[in-house]
Image (cartoon, rainbow, N blue to C red):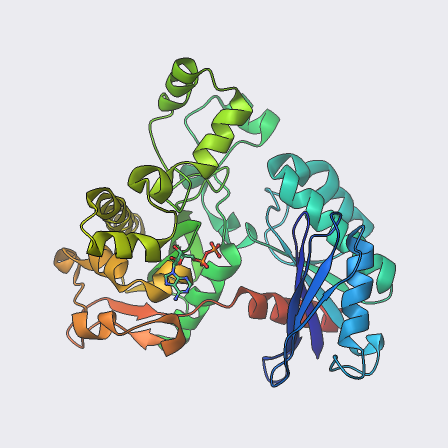
Length: 403
Ligand code: ADP
């Protein structure tokens, strides 16, 4: 089945066209600068990239241009739009309302619009524009929504509740939701396949480490706990996000600096983490270069992340009552051996034993790689994530079920 996967941002619309029979990406690209001026970057395997400035006043026009490009005799790979049999949308926040991927209906649209928007205003607004764009251009094609929060909906209340009055949870839905759920689901699923295919009885920690990072405890194939919280600001330090800290730090900094709540939120999201600690960069590769040149703050930033990952692994092993596997994925998890090494060193007491030489040589492009030694009680893997493939597979399954 040809499935178009859409990831709509406020001024961009990233897309990938999958053939789900082979899991092959037939085309991918990005409509950028929507509402500003407009440009499409379109890639087809074996062909030269196509880049063109085209006015894109809104997401409907961007969708029309991308469908026209996909069906263009020169640039495209489809004969007509009807060959797109389903559209899968990545949705950042489904709140407590969506615990799995769903077919778009008016009711689903309204829940997203009226109830989820509050939880992630910028992202949800952009997703709704992307959905409307596809409805305008492909009104008869099933649209499936795949939520970043859905996989985490199996968390029990003791893992998702905060220590604030219950009324706050009831009135404002304040609780832990987590993020990157589609990535955690993908790599946990691949790890379970490597362990023989039976989810029951498995205890896995999945580490999605990128610009944004989150760590999950996946027991019996279901999330028991995860490090991100009400928003993606929680958990370990990230490229520019602060991660967990004493909540009293927030009003303290606001009083000292005179920042407003919005400015403080912006500060915690954009000026902290690697960037704030190192004062060099938010990017791991720049930090590694700075460390090689003797920069102590860059080393401190990397040490903090490694330490915090280790702490989550230990905590989640305790929460699950054991540990069978650790998986690393996303930009840093796949490519930055020194972070994996920091996180895994000293976990011998849990039965963790990894091969440093293999770890040093492992990058995302290596494909799935076993990092643990044969005597390790815990299996350790680097598994490149593939959120888009998960979205395409969900879209195919749900589209077939309504045919
Ligand atoms: P995002 O959360 O934006 O999707 P990524 O998963 O692309 O982020 O991760 C970006 C991080 O991964 C950066 O800190 C980057 O330095 C790090 N990284 C290290 N090596 C690579 C690489 N070869 N390719 C991409 N990112 C890498």
